[in-house]
Amino acid sequence: MRPKLLLGWGLAGVMAAAVPAAGQFAVDRPAVPPPTPVPPTAQPAAGQPAAAPEAHPWYVRAEHGRWMICVKSYSGPVAKSLAEELAKEIRETYRVPAYLFEKGADERKKQEEFVARERERQRAQQQAFLTEMDRLRKESAERGIEFMESAPRLRVPRYQTIDEQWAVLVGGWKDMETTRKELDKIRTWQPPKNEQLVDHGLKDNPGQDGRQNVEVTAINPFRYAIVVPNPAAPKAETDDGMVRTIYKLNENEELSVLRIAKPWTLVVKAFHPPIKIRDYGAEKSVVEKASGRGDASKELGATALQAASMAKALRDPKFQPHPFDAYVLHTIHGSLVCVGQYDGPDDPAMAQAQRVLDGIRFKVERQDQFTTQQNVRLFDPMFALQIPKAK
View 1 (cartoon, one colour):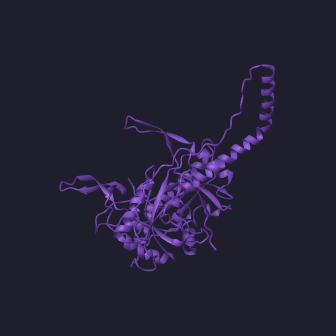
View 2: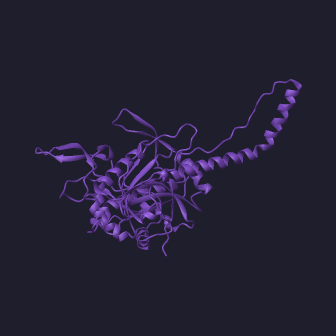
View 3: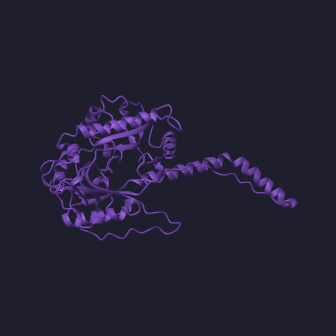
């Protein structure tokens, strides 16, 4: 299992650099609120709306600082409770501010609003038919004739299921340089005491006889923390240096999404370099190399080729149900595959493309296994991305 690096949350994951430098955590940080008990995550009563994420006392806000450090993200039904537990441990152990951020709430709200608007639009279109049905119903009742109901059906769009996703953020600071200095400190923290809060992976230990002994090992999330803009802060505040870096990485890419005319696109797949777990003093991991502490050209080049290959496959005239206008975006952490160009995140054309792409499934067979996987999803959870523009 790979650690879940927070990439792909809008421009935050795309443009966040993780370059450590010497520094003290006490520099330019807000006062830490006293630890407060974390109430258990309660389910809303039947018929009652769920509480907004902002209602949580630890939910991140714009005034907490422009730049943060993301130490871990969770997804699934228990994502919120795991994120709460990790934030609580950070506050109590290291006495620093830890905040929560939920990604799927806005997407789910937009989907619900779009479905509601679509229902009203279809009802308005069917109003003449419904009026005529009421007239025939009354006429049948007056004549004592049984009326056979034939109510029209509303056909609303079906969306992919958006998993609940919660991130744990530490910070914040006024600029990226200060945040980078604090990242090195956080990466020295000990793993969480509760092993349910960490991912696990396989580690190869060479034995005396030359054989590889594979064991399951916990992955310390603090070692893979990354710098991200505060997701609650205004999105217009963008680091010009990072934008120039993004443009430099994509200047020779023929399918670069930076060349499209409209300001938004739909990210459908992310490719990242593999993560290698190492002991202290051993060779640097791929993540460390990709973060600027080594040469990661080979690993990042491989992800760039994967992204470009998928984009070309989506553009193929033979692709079913139809070819897509696909692009790629290379970053310092990997490469993204994008589809289409849109006027904004609420563009109906984007919603239509997302519905079609989410419906694509594949049948995967392996010669060395007896089982066959049906309906395999090719794409990651999709999200709208505003294209970074260089000034």
